[in-house]
Every structure is written in C-alpha cells, then in structure tokens.
Image (cartoon, rainbow, N blue to C red; front, side):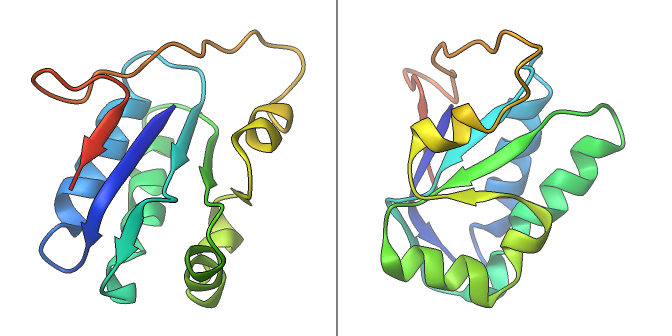
Length: 122
C-alpha cells in the first residue's frame, strides 16, 4: 500500500513515476496506490501512473491498482483514461478483494523515504 499526497503537476510527475516503480519493484507482489489526498493540479501529469505501470511490466508482473474515494479524483482519473490501463477503486478493501485469490498478499507498510512509512509526499 502506497499513499501519495501533495500536488501532482508537471514538476512532480517524474517523482511520482519513480516512486511507483521503486515501490513495485521492492519485492511486493501487488501495489495499491491511494491517491485520495493527491491534488491533481495538472491532469497532463496523470499518465505518470501508466508510464510507471509500463516500466514495471518490463521487469515483472506486479498488479497495480489505484484507490480514490474523492469524486473529483475519480472523475480526473476516468476522464484521462487512467482506468483503461490501471484499475481504479473507491475503497482499499475493494482493491484488495480484486487481487488474485491464489496468492497471499502482504499488507505491510511501505517505506518511501527518510522517516516515511507507508506514505509519500510529492
């Protein structure tokens, strides 16, 4: 589980993409990204999620899902076609339930930086 918050724009796009790729390649079997508290200042930066997903798929298959319980966030993700490449859910429980049943998925916190545990600020 990775929670990102802050402002997503053209200046934070690369940090978001890199953080998602790093998190996915840290030996997790799935990555659920909560973007509820992410302010989308530049919708043109949203493809950072799909770019990260493409980069990850070159190394291994790690299911990725986005969670956003904000109507504005859901609308932005759908209007920009992010949901066509990455599943988008309203609740974390729904994203977890959608993971394949044949695996046991870890739900431990993700370290994203100095002192950070389970969250990443853009």
